[in-house]
Length: 224
Image 1 (cartoon, rainbow, N blue to C red):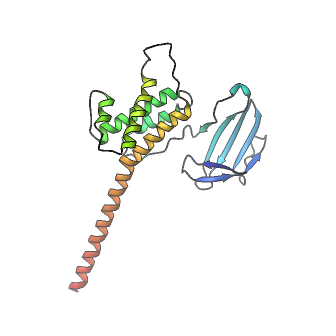
Image 2: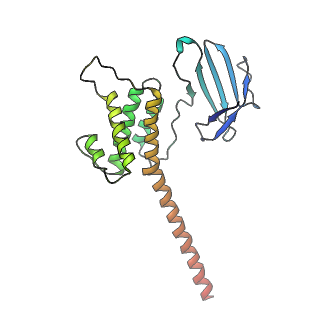
Image 3: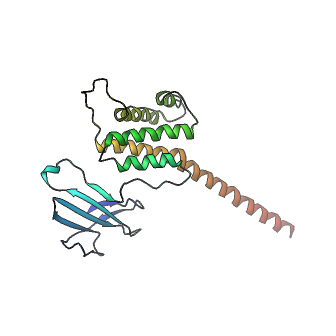
């Protein structure tokens, strides 16, 4: 059964066909990826996207001593999307870093997602209060209730990485897959608060411009 892979560069989703080789020089162009097996308990998978033709490299951990460690993408160095420049640079940087350290430190990744949310509230909504809790509360009634609740949950999860527990012996871990869900919320809000409004504004302007040209053409035709 074919595996499914999503290109981190262009987000094309495609089926994979498996090709096994032990020769590091040989690269198969006809098969989508190469599987290097029995290399220090690791398996390297090389994926070529049929759309953008860029390569991605994933490490799988085979030895029982790595049990529970998820596959790790080593190229590109994160799954972060490339957002346009009109998304504030600091938000883009924090978002990218949150993805880069996802496996290394999920708690730190969650803290960066929390910072992304705060930055977006400051920038997009122009809300600045004494703490993030009050800033999120100021969004009540302005955004979807489910998103409002999710943002508050992200804030609390980010606090796990940002603040020491009252009982210093209490350890509350955040798993990589859990921290990644927080990043996905950041992505959703970047799309809703920056990308979609920008695209809509461009579309509306283009329609108005097209109409102005057509109306001018009509006037010229009537006067000829």
